[in-house]
Image (tube, rainbow, N blue to C red; front, top):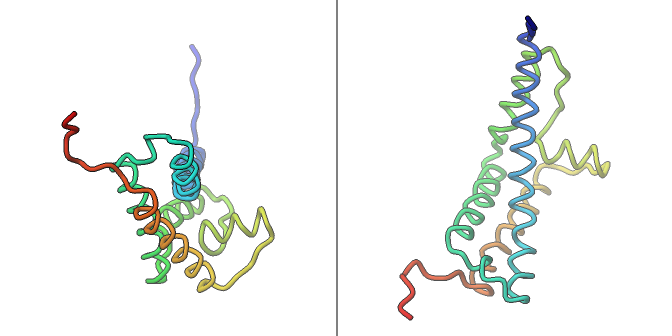
Length: 142
């Protein structure tokens, strides 16, 4: 009989890594959706005009912008850090984005710079609703 022994620390690390993955996917969705919307509009992709997709995208960047304006750390970052701390693992300082930009690009900036970038990006997402209008919720009456 095979018995697996799983420590509490490894469960916390697994959960923290899962949150990190979700966080990464969230950021990728927010960042990559905007260029895909404009590219899709130019290439005639109908899915970029899906109203639900566009509402979720606008809501996601709105949360990021609001957090930056209020000076609030992303709950996913806090949750991941807490789990890593419980596991006895090292935690990083600052926000998720700031940490990974620093790690990947050696980029350092004041929090207001990130807030400005998020705000400008959010404005671009909002403007995309004008330039690439989503379809209506009304049923198609062909």
